[in-house]
Image (cartoon, rainbow, N blue to C red; front, side):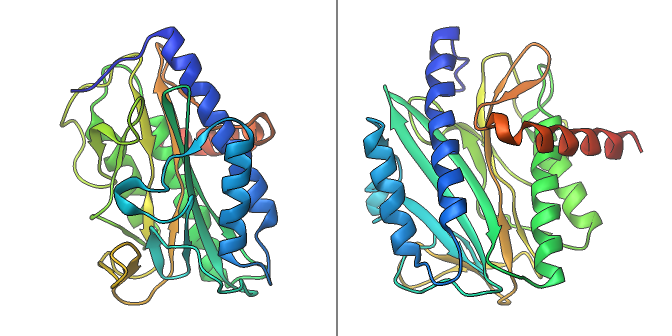
Length: 268
């Protein structure tokens, strides 16, 4: 069942998602050469608990950490470790929290020091694809319109969309209906309605789309060893389109640029 949230529920979702976004911003600033992903994870947990929230991922189906820290060819669900970040890495940080009965979820991929031109382009296109998906969100649109917009942009730049992992609804559970694939034809699936809250999260590979899960049962990597990037925002459907719940004021300018570029691309 897909739930349309009340104004009070949306305010609670806004609060927890803003908290997740602020903490993720701190983790982005922390990530640099010489830092371990375990140190980033410890900082994330301390920041979540200090705000009276609880980590959403830790203990979820047995996941052992507060953040998913996925390096280079790791697509999603990378477990934090003592491996130190080095110049040229790309690091995907995915984090969630629960506050006052509601969940927030957000992800970003960051460059560590100087990275290759291919890595820079991969991050740019993946974040752009996220905003193409967000621009497809409006009352009356179909869920599959989001994935169609993502896939169109990604493949136009020669990259591949991961099929095995998808976005989702979010609210009083971390993962709710509907599932939001990042590929496929549009104009299918449930219609979007005001009050629906969605976590949109394209995962994009530099090489082929294939992935596999390592022996730890969590870490998904590209089959061909190519780099992978992951960006995620949680949004609520509004009468005019949608509001990005995980967007910080400091990032609003860049978001407007990405949204404007997505609209121009659609018009073309």
